[in-house]
Length: 109
Image 1 (cartoon, rainbow, N blue to C red):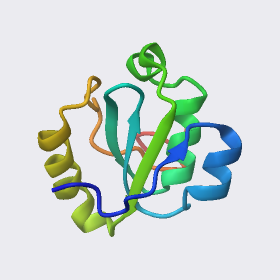
Image 2 (cartoon, one colour):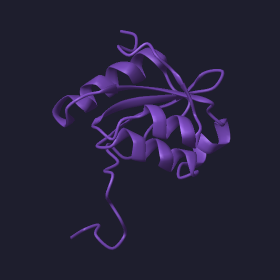
Image 3 (spheres, rainbow, N blue to C red):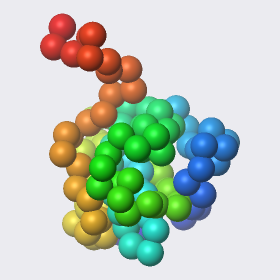
Image 4 (cartoon, rainbow, N blue to C red):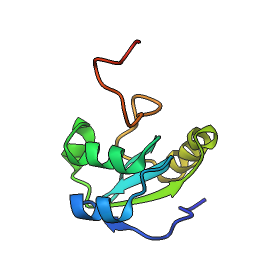
């Protein structure tokens, strides 16, 4: 099943701020191929994290675009799995979810 949101955007700080919602959902990063498909409580914050280089595999493949779909937290993982199976991204997510407000000081509390 293709992306429900058929719009794609440039993977730049300005584009992320202008287009990515600060809402729950799934997102994909691409260059010549699908680089990464993930899920997050806050799509915008997660994309900015990727842009800052927080994932070595993503950084190595240098995505230049992104897409997203908003989904409630209860449905995100299933939708992400559908997209991963269909598009076979180069980098697979190691952690199931990336909350927007996690810091080392609050982890494990």
